[in-house]
Amino acid sequence: MNSLIEEYKASLNDKEKVVLEIAEYKLETSFDIVESIGFKNWLKSKKKLSDNINNE
Image 1 (cartoon, rainbow, N blue to C red):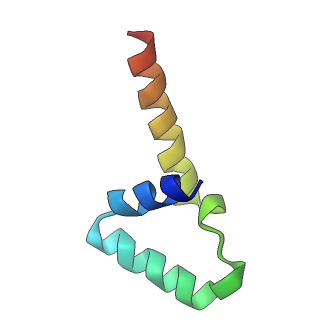
Image 2 (cartoon, rainbow, N blue to C red):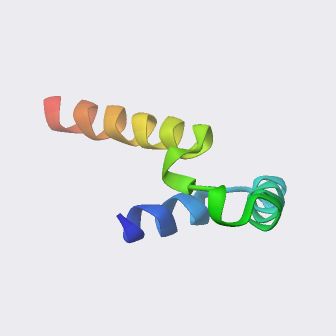
């Protein structure tokens, strides 16, 4: 899962990276990137892309 998190973070633009840093700072241990809406949406789109490639 760590490699997916790193891949997700690398895909963020500068504004999204700042928002993520603020969330991690303000929410501290209650923040879980895997449960965040952004990560879940990114993972869904990654899965759809993978499924489309595999179906071709």
